[in-house]
Image (cartoon, rainbow, N blue to C red):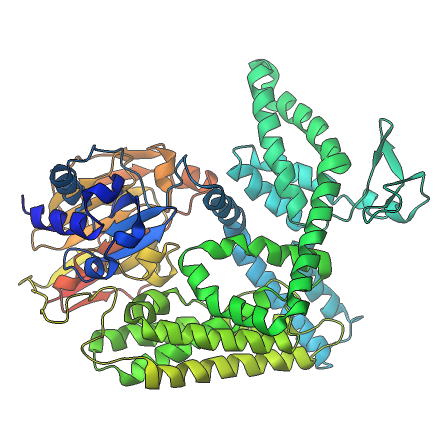
Length: 639
C-alpha cells in the first residue's frame, strides 16, 4: 500500500481512469495509451517526487518510475481498476504501431549499425577534400588516391552494408542481403550502360531508357546502384518474404543451400528488371523534390528545418529524414537538407554555456560542463535532457538560434558533400570536392558562430534561469517543497561485469544517457556473467532475464540492464540464477548470457549499471577506469 498515493496521483494527472485505454509496464516505466494526451498534466507528473520524468513516444505516454515500477504498476492497476497487461520493454516495437512509427523503427534499425563507419569514413573524405582545397595534395597524388579510397569505398559499396542490416531487420538471412547488393554493384555491369542500345523503353517520357541487355528476353534497365540506398532496402524487404516462402517448402536435407539459391534466382533478376529502376526513379524524384522546395524558399526552409530539428531528435522522428539525406548524397552528390540542421548542436552548447554562467545550482553546473563538451562534438542529448529541456526556455532559445543558423546555411548555399560525424568534425564535409572552399563553406562557418552566440545571448537575457526554476532530470521537485533526503550511509558498489567502461552519456538509450534514471556507468561485457554488486535483495527480475534490480542493505537501488532492446530475444541466450526476493552477497552469480549470440542477433551488448535512487544522495562518484573486473569498485555514493 506504500505506493497507493503515488498511483492515485498518476491516474489523476493522466486525465483520470476514464482517459486510459490501457496501461502496461517495462523495467523502468509505466506505459499508458491515453484517449486524449492533452488531458494529461505532464508538468505535475514531472515535478512529482515519485516520478523520474515523462516520455511520449510511439503513441504511448510513458511515466518513468525506476526499477520498482512493478510495485507501482500493481498499485495503479488496483487503484484504477484496469486490466493487467503483458509487460513490455524499453523502446520495444508493438505489433499495432502506426505506419509512420513502424517506418521510423525500420529506418533506425537499418542505419544505426553503420553510422559509426559512415562517420569515420566521412571524416577521412572531408579532410582529404580540405587537403586538396588548401593545395597540400593534388588529385593525382598517391596519398590523395589512397585516402579517397578509404573515405569513399564504404559509401560506394554502401548497398552491401545496407543489404546486411536491412535483411536482418526484415527477418531474413543477412548475408543473403549482402549477396543481392553485391550483384547490384558488380563491376561487369557498370560500363554496359554506355554500350550500344538494343531498344528504347518509355520513349518521350521522363523515364525514357536505352536498353543494352535483356534477361530471358525481358529488357533490363541498367542503373548505377553504387552508393544507392532505396533499391537495396526495397529488394531485401521482398527477399525476406521470398526466403521465408522457400524455407517452408524446401526439404530440410537441401535447405541450407537451396533456399539461398532459389531466393537469389528470383530476387536479383526481379530487382534489376522492376524493383531497382522503380526505386531509383522514386529516389531521384525525392531528391529533385527536396531541391525544388529548397530553391523555392531557402530562407523559410532553413528556419523551419533548423528550428525544429532538435524537437524531431527528441522524439526520434529525425530518422524519417535520414534516408533522404543519404539518397541525396547518392543521387546528386551533395545534400542541403541535413546541412540546414548543422547549426543546432552549436546553438545547444551556446544555451548550455548561458545556463552554466547564470545558475547557482551546483548540480546543474556539474551537468552543464560535460554537456557543453559533448555538444561541441555533436552529442547534444546530455545537454538537451539534462540541462536545457528541463529548464524549457533555454531549449526554446537554442531552437530559435538553430533556426537562424539554418536560414544562413540555406541562403548561402551551404551543402554537405559526404556523410560524416557530428559537431566540429563535420566541418570538413562541407568542402566541395571540385570547387574547394567556396562561399557556401564560409556561410556554414558564419551560421554556426551566429547560432552559438545568439543562443548564448538569448539564454542570458530571456532564458529564465534562476535558482527557483532550476530543475534537472535528476532533481525535479515542486518549487515550494524541499525533497526529503534519506539518511543513507556512504557505500561502495562493485562491478557486476568484467568489461570496458564507457560514460553513461554514450549508452545508446536517451533515458539512460540523460541520467534521467539515475547516475551510473555503462559496461561493454567481455564475459557473459552478471554478479551481485552489493549485499542485498533481488527486488526486480524481468521475465526475459535481461534486466535485474537489487536493493542493497544500505538502501542503494541498483539496476543492471544487459544490452539494448534485448527483451526482443524473449529470454533466449539468458539464464537467471536467482529469483525475485532472493538475498544475495557481493560476487554471487545472478545471470549468465551469451555475448556473441546476442551480438550476432544484432543487439548492442552495452550494459548500464544505474543507481536509480541517485536523488537520495548528495553525489554519486563513478570510476574513471577504462576496464573493470568483477568486484572492482565502480560507484561510490556520497551521503
